[in-house]
Image (cartoon, rainbow, N blue to C red):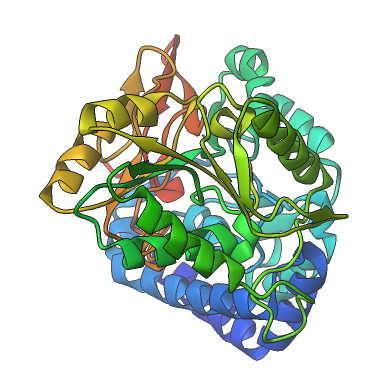
Amino acid sequence: MQAFESRLEKVHALIHAIRANRDNLIKIAVKDTGFTVRECNVEVDGILNDLQRFENIAQTFALRRPVCEPGQTVALVLPYNGSAWLNTAIVSIYMVGNPVRVKFASRDSGIARFTESLYRPIFGDTIRFDFSDGRTFLRKAMTDPATPVICLFGSDDYAGRYLDAIKAQGKKFVFEGPGKDPFIVLPEADLETAARELAYCKYIYAGQTCTAPERVYVHRSVYDDFLKLFLDFSRAVKVGDPSDPTTEMGPIASNKAVEAIKAQLNDAVQRGAQIALGGRIQGNWVYPTVVINARHDMLGMQEETFGPVSFIRTFHDTKEVLGLARDSRYGLRVSVYGDKAAANLAEKLTGEPYCHRVPEITYGRFGTAGVNQAQSEIWVDAFVSKPVGGYGLSGWIWETVGNEFIIKQGPKLLSLETSYPKN
């Protein structure tokens, strides 16, 4: 049996294990992350579908060889905002033949331990879990010659600290970072569809996803009507106990994120914005909040929010909103609602379809775009066959090729970035 077929069989075994332990996984995820039962059920359904889809591209993996030589392993550092979907990142690296050493976020130790209990009987030592702290894990990966590639999900300021070490060690560093995604509503948009979708994106996982819209630009001719619809949808969100199946939004998992949201709201009010809805924060509970008359010099328009808070401003024409959307350190994803002009605008904002070499970190471009597209469609096949990633500080690859240090940006697949084509 070919190696990739054997790996595929193990992925099928993982699918079976997740299905058999679904209830326990959801219970632990609710406890560790604060995500709701409803959200965790959606996430488990998604990962089961995505893991099954690896079979559709198995032949692609058969044509590639792993970056790891015998005795080597890829280091993978995962974020805290997930449970089931994190399996896709692990499996995508494994499917091309790499052993993987996995570090979950420390606060997700329950999820990590439970995931390890599912993996060990199937994968043995090929996929190992590390329970040291993040800095220790990365320091070891940086200096270990048996670790040729490091994949990190996290903040850009944290990842940026390792530039000198990566250069010195000649390793490959694949980084997936934050978003500050624009959501653009053109005059011809279906306003109810756009407002409903914005509410869904902002309040699922309490806004704790890198692709949640955080900068909302609405054409002034439809602003009043759109705002009314969005406020109505926002008021209807049921906030409460995550373990209650009827709850639609739970608390924020990160204390740091809560403090950042407080600072952004205070800054916005001091600079003349108004809180049209919400603004209430109790402990880690941040209630649906809508800030209007936002300006680009406000923290909430420049720094990642990572919570259920929307900053909204109007624009006059396509040229203006194009400049506003580009005015950011981050370039993960852009969403546009409208007619044919929406597709043209999205095309002007996006970069190349797959990551490519750039002379330096590139701003004002986005890795992917959605035109009248539901958020639920975004993650279908993500990390499986759909590249994920962006420009600016939303993600990059550092790599030494020959004796030359290079930077790549744009959407990427972990499977392709941890393997080579067979000769």
